[in-house]
Image (cartoon, rainbow over all chains, first blue to last red; front, side):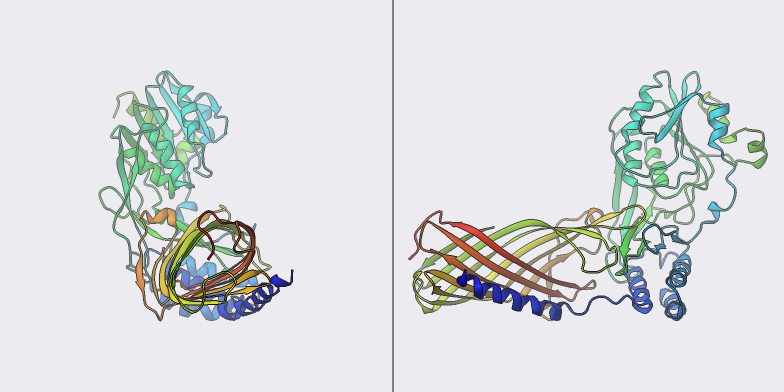
Length: 339
Length: 202
């Protein structure tokens, strides 16, 4: 045992030097936390140039407010106000586990969408059912037309529920996929569902990632692809969209569109394309920011613009009041060979 | 961990590889991210014995160069509402002077090793590895931006026999002044059974 003594002594001596090498622990005062958030956005946020944002000015304006904040909640509100100026739903602050996220509120979240899934299932869908995982509601809307409602792409590993829904509707030669009011979630999941409708591997988007400290530092175009997998549906597909489709829901629309057998019906999507990443502060708070630029296959940025449908149908308050869904009705008309 | 050690005249050749995964925990009281580190690497050193004798019962001192390669992927699981996880890669190949000192102690052998990287190539991904879509991208790092050392002290009982017991303390320090700075200290304390697979101790 004595022979191990030098080793143990060396261990203890070296352990004592570690703190000196690493430096002090990160500070958690409001000034230091503000600087951490500001710098991470400065290093990684993707839309400074595209949105013509002067990040230095915003930092200079909000830092004194952050330092002067009397409480953590007031400090979080200042951070939330600063990132809200980016006009990006993928930029936000979550001040602690279980706390409400603070950030930009899209106008599309406050303007009525006049979409009520209850009306669709009560008026149009016969024998509406849920898949086993309860992520997809579906049923027939005509003798040979099925309807699938995907309210969210949150979670992972449930793309096969689309196979189950399609298997349960063997008479369907056409399909309506309703992703209205879908705020997104996991892009991989969304694209995995779209793979059921792909005819071959195709590029549905390009992304460029921030890869350096300059606001214009990006990788070259990285193609995002969709390839066939799972139950293959070969009929016509009508994807229903509106202004409350964000992020992964928009990737789903892009991926679906590549097959050439898909018609997008409804309203333009929200245009939230940033590809968010998460960072964590030394006090445990988390924040989210966009780190990429996403382009359509035609190399068009759609952040803040959205993806226009092939057939524009505006939902109205009057139709909703009358329990009519104009978008579903137009999709059914198209499926029946109408205009 | 596995090691290779060979003495040819006044030349000492040494190589070792290591790998493993660890869950990292924070000393902070705040609920910070959960991190799991998967790492591996190895070192090749060629040294010239400049003092003493390589036999197990004699003191020996050797100087030379060491080339160290390592790669580490840290999976960070954040406490955000979506429980996001990201993978961060840090790989490096370094070259620099090294020294080995061995001396017999209580029928065994104590060895101290020190390597100080003077030249470094590093791949420090700018963002989440899952999103970067690229292969290993090593770039030359200026000596001002890279500071570090690898040191170990070990004691091996019955070093000249086929089986022996060994205990080792290792410490590695890296200070990389990148756009996103790296400060890393890794320490390990190992107790193990040593098996000589070939050759014989001089």
